[in-house]
Image 1: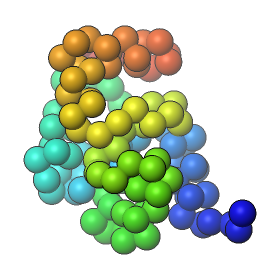
Image 2: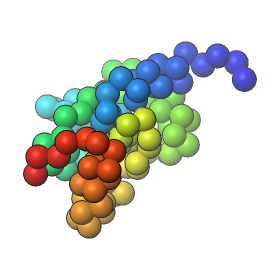
Image 3: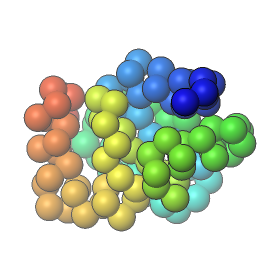
Image 4: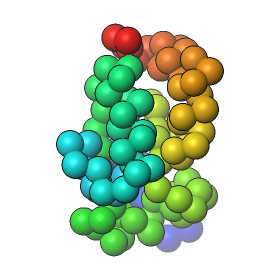
Length: 111
């Protein structure tokens, strides 16, 4: 397989930070309701995370969908592992599974 600079960049992002969200907008100014919902969950759990704005980078916007084989944004990664999009994050949060997932992976949760 040929080198894929976007895929390499995504790999670097998800290895550099424990919790990464590829989203529309930024954590302080989400540009869609789904991204805002994921940010709200992470902020509620007081988990440190890094957001990447796909609206500012068309290569990243397409690349992340291919990287995860998931068609929608936002996308949440914990310790390099794809968790899911908005609906999955909300369901996991409601059931307590998301907090457990953070704890299992050694990510501190304050809520």
